[in-house]
Length: 537
Image 1 (tube, rainbow, N blue to C red):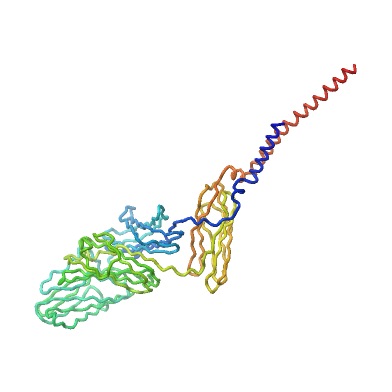
Image 2: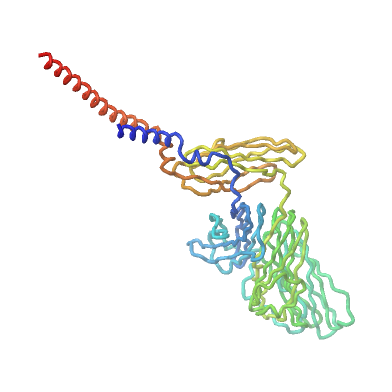
């Protein structure tokens, strides 16, 4: 009797565990999506400009990083450059030590790299963003180094100015960078032995690009002559370097010098801030004058950082630099300098200037000197659609749970959205996408049914909401808690497979127990009758 009661009790408990496992009893309430600090970064754009470059030409690498998490991130971008044989040619590390990207914002990391004397072929650039103790998936892009010369001929080091014989050039350009379709003005001042009439002629660029205008005579510069060169580069011109030679000649005297006119690869449709450099020499003061002009695109920029790594052949310490534009920070004294430009309006231009007390006799260090890095943080556009909340039950491995997202339209007109959830691999979801229209100034709740696989381990998992609308996209990463597989959930998930053998086992036990009782009853009746028969006799 005791054994039978124990067996029946254990069977009853097993049936309860199969039907009502503990997680259904303990976690049957709905809870908000966990507000756990979650860092997440995504490369939303990786481009190379230009995609075809010659030797000794600057190439810009642009990586746009978006903060998809719910906490601040301080990312570092690493760009590895490989030649056609997959050999690493350069590694560019881009970061902004003091600038965090806040939730929902994006930042451009722009680095310039000179191709040098690399051979022609197809090159590959790989970008990865590191943040916290994580990293994004890598993005790959290809570009080409071609052997054809830039028009009319490439400038290759060394670039050495002609010797000065009859006259001395006291102020002159060395490098003038320009955007296609842009007009720039540069000047030349020459010291001559007498007040003879002289003229200046320019070669190396089409004549219809340039106007040479003599500067009016100045009494305190009696033995000097000055000219202004107004250069207009047509918008259709291909990027490249032009070696411009200017010759000053008069009665019995002649002198010439040169500078590099660099047409940068910024097409009219380029939608990032662009940057050009100008380098001039003032021999009277023994200075090199550097200016960096930053021109914004059609976007509103919240903060733009320019990081300049000055070659050691030009100056070896930041203490030697005289700043026309005060830097935000001296990153290293050898020197690496950062300037910060705040609140740039669309198409606004700003200039950074400084000078160093040195004049080089060879121009190559001036010419092959790209800006080290530019970081651009855009002003976040006002969100027309806002997330009021996301809620879900604690998800159980192998069970379907409900994830609800409440969105509100803050605009005064209806907004069409197409919302979807991005889940870990092999998770199930119904529906895949919800397309709806949010009425103005109203809210709507979208419901998705999500099921983690039965083998999903306990822990927190990231789900990403993406809801594109108009020209924007609402993207948010959130975390949900999954109660992973235990013996109870495993049994519940596969209870239909265990039910048949359970019934068979219970049937066998009952069959063995019932005949034994029947045999005892049968044996008892036979002995009683035998006793009665013996007493009658």
